[in-house]
Length: 95
Image (cartoon, rainbow, N blue to C red; front, top):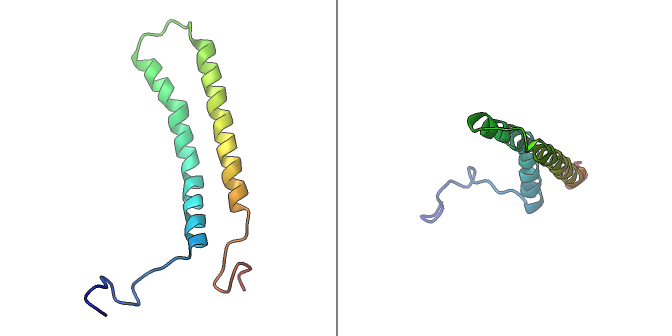
């Protein structure tokens, strides 16, 4: 161990670029429902705190439809990216 290495050699971790990218995609897929909750419940909280005359109902329905469609497209894109087999210790086929 040299003076420039912060960790001993057995404690250092290195992930191959493809494995790191896949892990980040999995993390993003786990955050899609949380992001969706903010998209759907944020406007409800805004409407509950301010005056509401009911005139903007159509606008909110369009917003919810667009948010839902956007979440579907994001989830489909992530699912397509994650469809490839996970790289294993012996290569892409896993051994």
